[in-house]
Image (tube, rainbow, N blue to C red):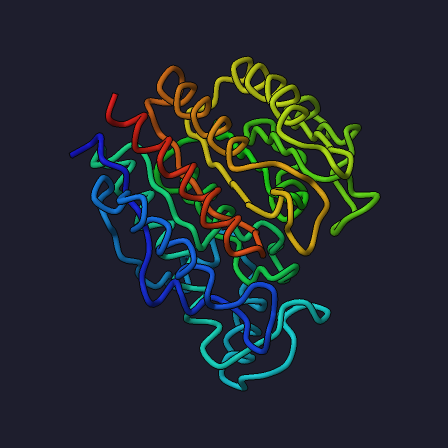
Length: 318
């Protein structure tokens, strides 16, 4: 049914997580899924399994030599994919490929009209650049989705909306001069937090100036401040009228996350998801894909991501 939400979970996605007590551990999908079962949302979504992405698909966004490097480090089973935050482990290539492949499988089903919405808790790896990994992110699934929308489906005007506590630098800078990639990113001020980018003055370059909206939030900001600033996002997207919406809903912006300082509750994520679904229905043929992104307090990510999933489901049931 076209109104059903596709929910991407499975063993292959669960393997994307770093060992030895790393904040982005392999238990994050399980934390989400236990709450999904508790809320019985699994009965209201269509469960979908990931598939691996091909080399050609990965190289729509990533440089071939970088894909080679990840493959080699995966075989080696140790080393660092970036400067130390993103360690290699045996099978990291396959796990990272599954994250991208699940996103692409969901995209295919959205573009075929089978569904309007997908949600993928293990995804939204927004720090990976075309030629490098960074910030716990190996392959940039959202970047591959964007380039696939352009190359395969001819969809040019795409919105990337990011409420993760960290600035989505791996999506902002590759498209900084692209006037048809509409970016709206609310994050903790980079003066206080990795990756140190995403100032309000960063609005795009050249023809793309004004097609990007960065909203840095002060440490300690909560739901009230988020909802006030969120109105700017809704107005911005309404003016630019994208044909497709990608939503990265990192849960590390909630109070109590060990790596950041914002104090949202899951209500902020529900509010954003609700209005994005409405906007998608009005201007993007209902098409929106959600990705979990960051989040290192397991209770927080379980509640925030399921709040998004619930809004996706309720929006499709109306």
